[in-house]
Image 1 (spheres, rainbow, N blue to C red):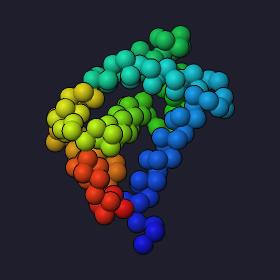
Image 2 (image 1 turned 45 degrees about the horizontal axis):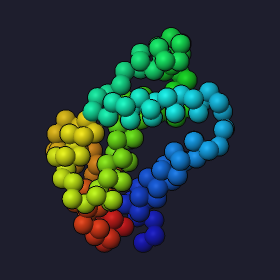
Image 3 (image 1 turned 90 degrees about the vertical axis):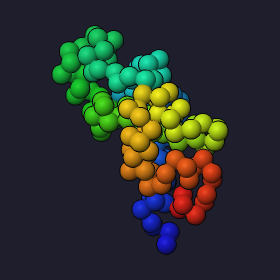
Length: 142
């Protein structure tokens, strides 16, 4: 069936990847773009740890409450959930392009507690396992 949950999740992740690329090219709202770019930069600089909203607020020269509000308006999600989503999409791309990486290596590189935690979040988010991506088994990805 064309509207299976796995297919919907996969299409959603592709759309999010495309949208994240567009944030660098299309100025929709300068405040939203600024907060997303800064967040992505902080995550890229510190991939192993969860960035605290206070760090973002300090970089933006606003209060914690204002940073939370602006971030939620820009992304429609919480700061922590955004970081997890960012890491999961990064993990998906790493697995797709570098199948030699183990779950443990990816989990440690991207700041997940361990490979079990990573695998559980990955399957919950995408509807299939990291192994399915690594091996390119199309039947499990649909």
